[in-house]
View 1 (cartoon, one colour):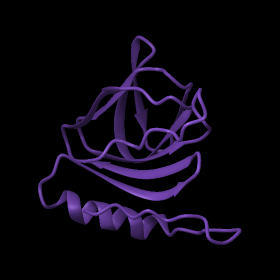
View 2 (cartoon, one colour):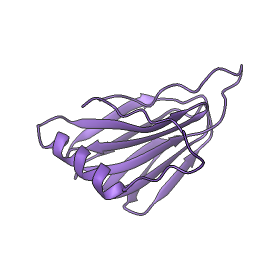
View 3 (tube, helix red, strand yellow):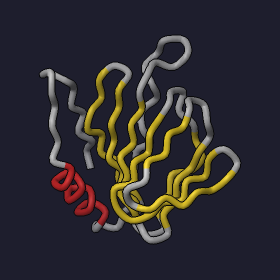
View 4 (cartoon, helix red, strand yellow):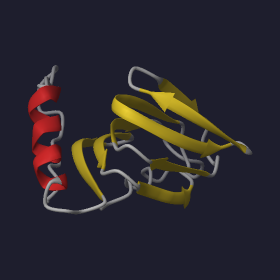
Length: 131
């Protein structure tokens, strides 16, 4: 899937997450372990929809800026800060910049990843993991 990079052209940008989730789910049906779809990429803000098929994972990595992980569907296991937390749909996790973390999902899941802020040194934040 080609990621969608939408910049803020107006004061307000609105997404129908149900449509975006269906698009990611359709791509997952093709057999990939995970799909990442960037919804917004503007300055220090990144919003990425990530779908994981059962058994899918994002290996340990870190972001230089604070992040949020909002579980939209299913369940994920978040390995961060020396422990693993199981997050059901509706959960939001917030991690400070520089925290190593990984995500996996035995049953499959859909999450919205948000990176916000400028990393130390003023460069743009690292891109969200790609599929």
